[in-house]
Image 1 (cartoon, rainbow, N blue to C red):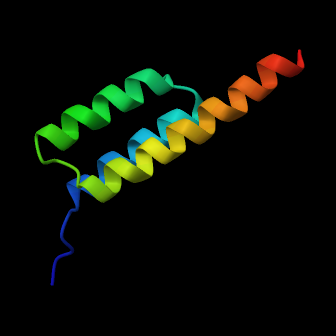
Image 2: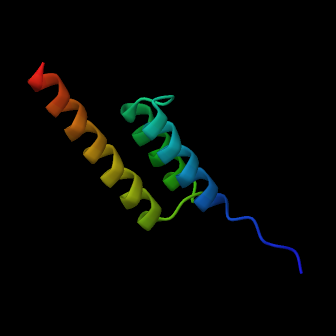
Length: 68
């Protein structure tokens, strides 16, 4: 039996990886995720996961900036 492809999972993981490795800025991650949600390509749970990761990333970056 063939494995099914979960587009939402793929997009979520790709956005989170891009955020983590710095290839996608957090603002674009949020915009892309919003577009994917509007087009029903990701679920609201996946959107929440991405939003939480973006907030955490921004908090870490703000902490780094204030300590310099």
